[in-house]
Image 1 (cartoon, helix red, strand yellow):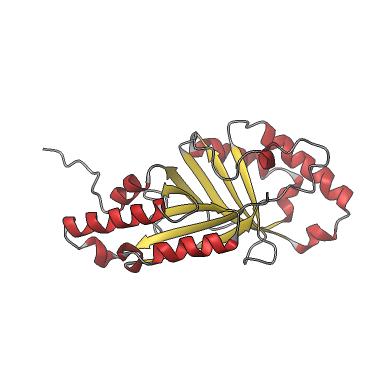
Image 2 (image 1 turned 120 degrees about the vertical axis):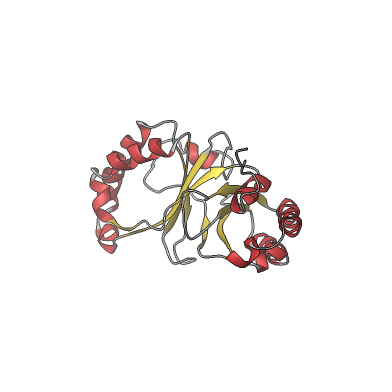
Length: 230
């Protein structure tokens, strides 16, 4: 099954943050209940401390585009959604890479979406230069073999590749689960030195999210989980 991925970012308005504590708690509980009942797999990540333009990342996984549409509509009915904007959103589908050949596609065989055993996720859209597609398939496969070889040196970083050709503004949306953002930093630093890197057109914006229950991620937005020293 080539499942669909929907990545939504949420930026809560300053006006909502000035509401009373009881009102904010009510709005947060409403959104938590809506996500839990939206009918698709939903994974929450806090962007507090890593982005200035978004507070929350939701990674939705579904078998059908209609399911994602209904899920997002369910969330749109909540009060906190109305007090927020969605500065970035991406849409992608899972499929097996043509460059793997007979190589076992472990990524594609695994269930769609995060495994949930890593505390961080890094998500970003990516587009290749058109000159990449002018290369013969055999040449692209050779170059990608070097790219994969670097990735294999970091077995604790797990990749999820989404394809967006013709259905979004970018060609791919990639997500990496990692134990620490610095593990992913080391991987990308090594990938910059590969031949494939020269064919990347763009790979921003980049989101580093901390995996946690949605209720905890929402409490981080307005500081409800902060402890004030005595």
